[in-house]
Image: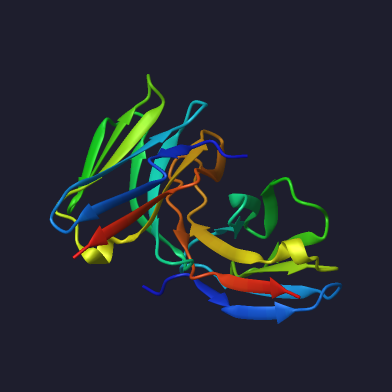
Length: 114
Length: 111
């Protein structure tokens, strides 16, 4: 069974640009969550998509957005990039059940904003 | 916000020794999970323990959960150099499936 695939693995962008990250979950999983990891703030929840709908949202500005497609693949978009957006962005795949929350992560996308 | 707090922040041991990491959290939980992360890469799922369970084993891993103290521990027995990584606990609450992570414990296992 294939794991969670995130693309690209590395990105370098300039301030003010926008970026789109992609995540393909484990086959059969309907929930995709996104997390941002920085040395200062640790792992922070961005949002969760379940069956193409945003189910939960973390405390991030509106520049961070996402979507999920009918095949459960998800994309995350960050507009008007700031230096502070440099981070490892991790995608988690789970069945989406409220009781079984076992989540499996991809290798992450390392975003550097210069 | 961080729900879990891992303790210690860093742990250095020799191969063959046992490593124990602790996690404390603040609110009632549904499940608690432990993850490993190697050098800024993705998180590897280690084990999930439900709020009604007290202990769980997986290979060289043993996890305990004490809901009355809002704490969990991860024991790695007979550590190997390959166990060198950061370890995180993550909790979720019933009806809210997202995970809240602690800041992690950095484990260094020397040959």
